[in-house]
Amino acid sequence: MPERYFVDELPDAGPADLRGDVAHHLGRVMRARPGDVVRLGDGRGRSADAEVLAVERDVVRARIGAIEEEPPAVRRVCVAFAPPRLSRSEWLFEHGTEVGIAEFWPLWTERTRPQGERLDRWRRIVVAAAGQCDRAWLPLVHPAMEFADFVKTAVAGARFVASPGAPSLLGLRPAAGDVVLLVGPEGGFTAGEERAARDAGFAPCGLGTSVLRTETAALVGAALLVAG
Image (cartoon, rainbow, N blue to C red; front, side):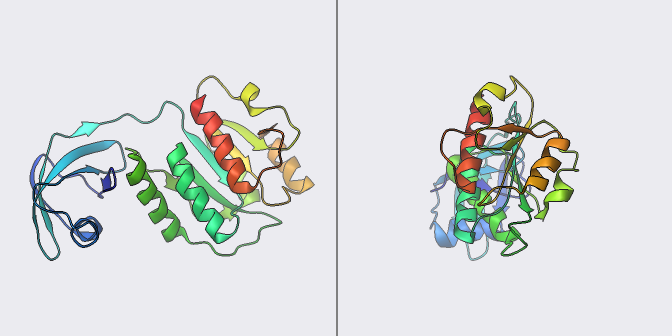
């Protein structure tokens, strides 16, 4: 079974009826049985173990244990990126959640025009991935927006834009505080977009000696920032 199941509101300790998606998944997909213990979370740091008491058609009756609270990460890493092809975008959302990305900002750029946005599916992917890797805090997946609008958005944190040949992110990352990493499409940002990013306070940073695909660059950059 996944490490954690998410509910909109975590019930108080004691008997509770689980309904909706979590009941369907536990009862119909995972074939939970009385006596099974699962981990529930609200995606906002609150978690509890729950013992399955009975599985009925549309409800799973459970006994909720003590509520535990996990504080948010000391550093929140937000990644803004031009979505690659659909399957690779989904890969980015799934593995970015495992790496520890706190916010995903899909962007439309001059070289990636609006196509294939699947916001509901992307959000389902991060919920599933967060359950598998036992994250207490769900990442935010923002609706896709235009690059020009994003760079004007007041997203808190140090700002970096992945640029081949720039100084390594390892030497630029701050010792503390939130970080925003901007990753371009296949072929990179246009010269105008690069200027707009720098004017908005995004410092160019390198992610190694190779030219990386968008989804790879996002994960490498996020991993370096989360680890730092």
